[in-house]
Image (cartoon, rainbow, N blue to C red; front, side, top):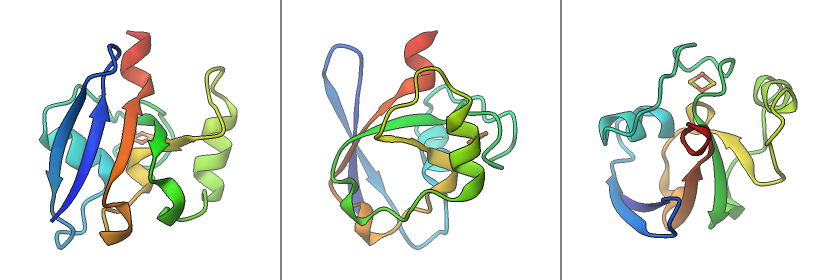
Length: 107
Ligand code: FES
């Protein structure tokens, strides 16, 4: 198990306990915690409804893949710390990660 925090619009952080042995993506994990992520592309890195900003602890994350980069490129609100949660597989390097859900903020 690792711990990830999700910061809401008010700066409050929710702690999530995330298993790393199930091969789940961060998007699937967030959905399991009932965050309202549509994931209309099914985790293909195309719909950007799983757009997150990495606020802390992103050093161990893998490089952006081509799909992710191309999709983030189409978003007006993408920033240097933007990622697509469906392209990140939960693993030990993500312990202590703090994220904000960008797609939900716009709603
Ligand atoms: S679920 Fe569609 S881009 Fe991540």
